[in-house]
Length: 446
Image 1 (cartoon, rainbow, N blue to C red):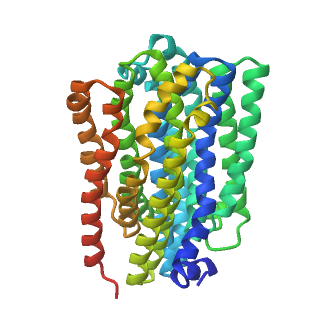
Image 2 (spheres, rainbow, N blue to C red; image 1 turned 90 degrees about the horizontal axis):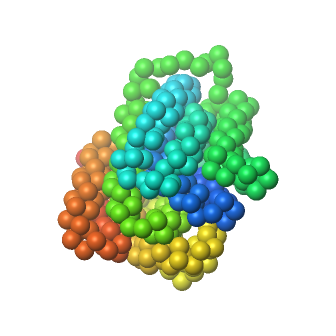
Image 3 (cartoon, rainbow, N blue to C red; image 1 turned 120 degrees about the vertical axis):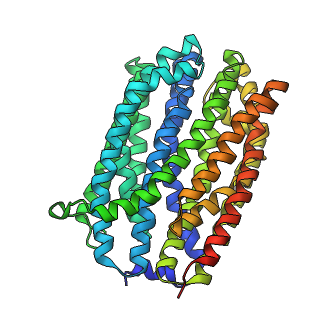
């Protein structure tokens, strides 16, 4: 048994989950910082219009990157399960099959994004003064989708054996490069929106190259060997059976948020810009919490493979406690220091005040999303992904759309728009937890 596998299936869980999650957390945060660095640089050095252009794309970028992260979760769950069961041949086949499937999905998303990005921005009601810059930013950023797919593949494979440190190192190096290129392209080259987009994709290809080189040099069961690159239809189906619903589930959140963005766009440009600045906190908080969901899925998958029932359930509760606590702490800090946070992205006092409308509601709401997302991650670790996706679609998409056209349409205040988050999370969490515990009880653990 691999040492990392033994660590996941034996020993003190609380400490192990925390040690696993911290590098993963920092890796996720670095991905958020790619986009935050773009918005901070254009907001401070290119003006509020450029800020609004880049910020208006955040939901669409999240839709595509969320789908790729979901595909990676399928790679992680299946690889972790085979490792827990000590089925090394199956684990190797999963790695090499995923190394083919993930880049192909990245190329497909690139094509879709380049072709349809402007049309979707128009449907969202993006302001006339922002849409040209937003469309340009998106078309350049979508060129980085294959690189992002490769990085998420490598990160998922490494996380399956408990290695979350190397993906962090690679992403940190790419993140530093991204910030440096942002400053060069925007301040020196005066490229504003195009500059930050080019900096982002260069950084993504660097992180992808680093993680592939590391896998090629790897000595363990997850090593990537070019002669072994072969598509196993059975392993591809297993990965996609979890990855596609998980990716769709992430995309559903972004799709629902398109209606929210359309609601925000019904206010003036200052409110749109303030929302764009404040929305940076979402990715930051969600991804800190998501590190514990990743831990939950990996630990659940390996202990399911090893048939350790009690340890698998304990993994869920510990991950839930960590994710709720981190969301609550960060939310309170954002409420207390929201103006300082927003000043990273804009110097306009009116934009900062508009952004505080969002932070004032969301800061007290973030933590409650843990009950929904941790149950989803636990179900994924047990190999279940379709039903959680359906619950997300109903609770966090259909419900949000209904809210926008009823509650928000009636009050038409920005606060009534932001309140839909906590109500939809609560509704979805109830359904997800009922489903997870039913699946857990019905699994064969002997």
